[in-house]
Length: 250
Image 1: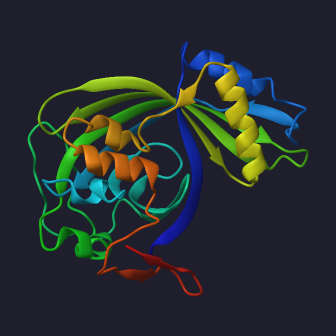
Image 2: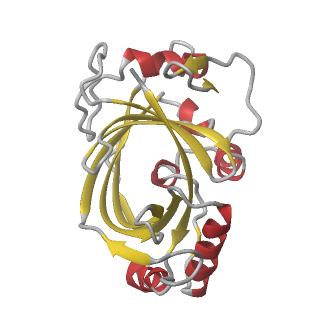
Image 3: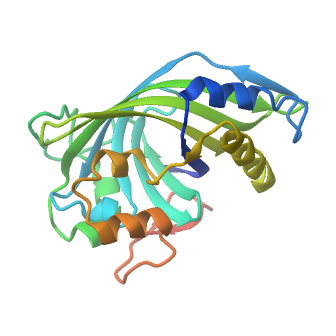
């Protein structure tokens, strides 16, 4: 059965490398309710993203991937839910899937699980889902902890390498600031510190948008970056992810 996790995060481009930005966050100890900053080990993430050939999902602000590595390996369907906010529907790596799709230059470990494919069918309208890009990330993580040891927020410094299905390649560095148990005021405080360290908000809302920037239409890219799905078209699918859970519209 799918689980749903709400993500509230912002992405930044570091001006002088990620180290300066991370040092600025470490210096937040003793402010904004942060009692300690815990540095985690490096994570190696390997994700294959799926979409239609004309990128209908990403044009609508939706991302679908199969990722290994980190603490949440599996299939992830991310749906826009407001400014800086997404609902991520998760299934395990071995979730039942249909026919395998193969695309040159992109490794794929299986077809999209039917449960997730059904949720985006109103967007795909019968068009096949296939790998469009492979994204590998080397991630350094800081946890911002309160006095009880609970994680308020997670800061990730990512070095990203993307290989679109057309055989091209691109790489970049970025910073992600994600709330865990902290509130919106903490995210604003983190935003201020990162900007003081020279970081600037990323021009795209997702790694996938940046990797495929050359293929996205100007109108579609602008819409998905500026509006995380507050306006959606007709023909939405609703999911009840677990008993008592909230419905999600696609």
